[in-house]
Image (cartoon, rainbow, N blue to C red):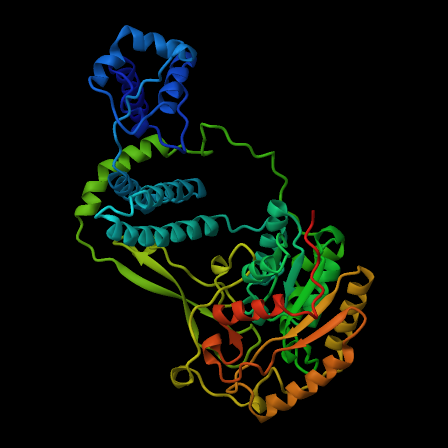
Length: 525
């Protein structure tokens, strides 16, 4: 109530003393409701703000002519220019301090959205510092810091809104990839090209790089999405394409990127067994397909509102009041590495963890510290980008990798022992081929690269059997592209012996975009 009285008092003083400070006071994300005449005056004033102020601006703001202009804005011949110059550096620091303070007490998604808004404004203001300014170098460093803090705030907002709009399939990556895919379709439409496969596809084919290279060859405008899921076998891909997605949600081209492990019917398919035992799968079997909630048409006005901003005016005032004491606390910032495991749920050999995101922790209590944690499978779903791709930065260095991870021979690897290319996975492959042919969707299988360290004699023998098996399967709309041995010693393209990093994923995407075997769809008119 007190905050409301203060706000009203401030508005009354503004109406008496002029509106020369309104450009600084009105936040872009909030809309204060004024009486109609005052609102028109404020809109006229803010629309006519100039980077330079006129002499005696206060006197002119209070003059009768100015008052008349405010009441009849259309009749103004030359809009008044009463906005004071705003220093973008100061504005950025103020927004950053506000964001940092609000983050200490933010709990709801709306509150974290406000924190995000403040960081975005801080970044925008800091980036506005001119290249020739002496403060430019420092400002760019601050932009990088603010971007990291923005990422943390976005992750927190996402975590709070983590409840699924459909029944769970008991696989966090599958759930999140499905929700993202449905949201992607709602936002930009069904992709022209869909990438599927296990974790090797999730981290191994960069859809944005694929789009960009295709655009240079006359395929501009094609949309590509990566629907890779950790542990996905041929049976999982069959479920995705035939049972999960509707005809309208299917692409015009499917790229299945993986390797021999996805086709070994000799091993127990724990990922598939867990998924078909889930509530989500049971709902799917009775015709209840996962869907996102329907929303009202989204529009934006010149004056934007953040819904549910009960904390806005009062909390901002509180945050400004407490900002000084918060900044005076001499607490050194600690930086933590959030890590991502690359292995599937049924992998018997642990993999090294790969640095993914920096997380800044301030002096808040441990219970309130923002930590970026992976889910039960070891992956961070927040790190997956808008096209479904998980970019990994680290590079495979055998000397250091095997200091932290045992070197396990293929004969002891549960992905290869026992081994059989005849069985349920082969049946699933044939079902997928038939389905794609019926839907007139070209199906391309890409055998992704492996390192020499990974291909010991047992695995090398399995790879040879697999390549022969796939070559016999090729034909009638099914294309097999073998990249398995092209980078045996190019460790800089890998994050571990069998998973590509973001550089390898970009290189694979470039190769695919220029491969004449692949029947890329024509861009839509």
